[in-house]
Length: 208
Ligand SMILES: *[C@@H]1O[C@H](CO)[C@@H](O)[C@H](O)[C@H]1NC(C)=O
Ligand SMILES: *[C@@H]1O[C@H](CO)[C@@H](O)[C@H](O)[C@H]1NC(C)=O
Ligand SMILES: *[C@@H]1O[C@H](CO)[C@@H](O)[C@H](O)[C@H]1NC(C)=O
Ligand SMILES: *[C@@H]1O[C@H](CO)[C@@H](O)[C@H](O)[C@H]1NC(C)=O
Image (tube, rainbow, N blue to C red; front, side, top):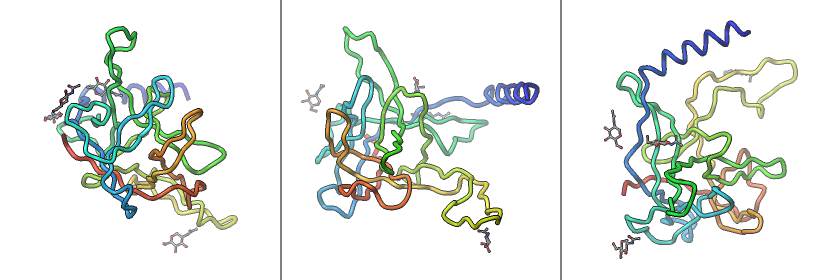
């Protein structure tokens, strides 16, 4: 095992030599929805805890200097080819007195054992989620795995090897962040949202 791990680390190091990180131009994120109240809203990073934000909604277009609503995408370029997936990033505002300066946070989801509604979390968390763009629509790639809704006892399942699925299970829902209660963007892991306030939305980037 150790030998294999060492070999993989070596290969990763070789791969890292040619891949370089890059950051996209800044953009706003705009909602599309069948709900007239939600359609056309813009997202901004709103406080939910220490160095933790979620996507909250503005009902009009933010100013070009409104850093709470400006996001970037970090991706890698490997031999001139841009990666399909990357991190959705946001620069935490640096205040002169703050010990936190130039801290980039990135999008994650807060999964729960009590609900299938996972609020968006913009944080410096343990893990980030990789996201891509279908045109300008934000998606999460569906990992190569088996669909357990099709399982039959003793019958080995079909396994999808590719990351071809461009999942867009975004919803705007009222979410309790303790002590805050906000209309925020969340991801529904599967099926119908457990939370009855959720409305489906798409998230579209619009360059500043
Ligand atoms: C890196 O991203 C910037 C936009 O932020 C773009 O102008 C530039 O061409 C990219 N670099 C490469 C090597 O693609
Ligand atoms: C942002 O821009 C608006 C108008 O373009 C200006 O009135 C405002 O002072 C600016 N705000 C900041 C924080 O620079
Ligand atoms: C995103 O890229 C910027 C510019 O290269 C970098 O400073 C920042 O640390 C990156 N953020 C994350 C979360 O990877
Ligand atoms: C695997 O996919 C094939 C082709 O779509 C289908 O006929 C078969 O029933 C599937 N098997 C399982 C176990 O889902």
